[in-house]
Amino acid sequence: MKVAVVGAGVVGTMHAWQAVARGHEVVQIEREAEARGASLRNFGQIWVSGRAGGEELGTALRARELWEEIGARVPGLGFRANGSLTPVRGALELAVAEAAVAREDSAARGHKLLTPAEARGLNPALRGEFTAALHCERDAAVEPRTAQLALREQLLASPNYTFLPGREVREVTGAGTVRDDHGQVHRADAVVLCTGAWLGGLVRELAGPDLPVRRVRLQMMQTDPLGEPLTTSVADADSFRYYPAYASSALDALNSRQPQAPAAREHRMQLLMVQRADGGLTIGDTHEYEHPFAFDTVEAPYDHLTAVVESLLGRPLPKIRRRWAGVYAQCTDAGRVVHRQRVADGVWLVTGPGGRGMTCSPAIAETTANELNW
Image (cartoon, rainbow, N blue to C red):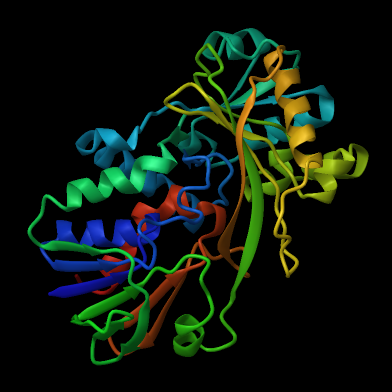
């Protein structure tokens, strides 16, 4: 079978990986020299802890297995089973963490409530004051800026894989014909469009104007090296307000009795933090849903994140090395992991994983391959 994958972000690359692993001939077409979107502008977290129970959690857990398997073959991914800690302060935040540990699927996530001393034993860099910490043993991380490059280097070792960068696809037909802006025609038995946040143009022509997917903008930053290991990923209690696994009467009480800080509320924020291979910290993030998106970044979210991180670390944050904004595509139905649509004979659109993209991409691609009988 010949498979054409359009898009070289993490979702597209994992589809190419699945197809090559199953013995198929693959051409992957990317309009940039390399993917430059959300696949690089994220935390690199394999985030199991906050996923909604049921299909979403099952997808994340399967993806976590696949990431570990692939990471053993591709060291350049930087896969590490580092887990996560969410420090909590006060009775209201503690009650939400306790409710999370009491869930029926808590063991599958590796959830455990730790005392401050136990949390610091796991992550000594957390010198700030907190009441307890929610530990998720199943969370993990990879290096987002280099993961696609490492995967592609491995793929290029196969004679069945071809990568064509700098080509924008202009036409796709149900006959398995893909025409790029160089005038080259690629014929395939199956075409998978993994176009990320690019939802206009060809995607709109094929899928129609009522695609149940929206674009979301975020802001993040990265510091100079911390100078010591941050041995786990770290979140704050605002992540309870964002991730569906924490929905409970305890969360209702937290929301009603302890509102978010003004900047966090205005920018729909949570703290997530991961240490990079060079020792720097990736820190975020915000969520903007209203179009048109701003073309610039604003400082208030960064000031808020800096204050939260410093309160957890009990020390000043290293110098900020870079700041950026990114946009991802998210299903408008929060209960859907991804939007997978047959848009023509032999042509499928796979989009809209939102913030689940990095976490769930290996399992999303595996499901596509299974459903298409690759």
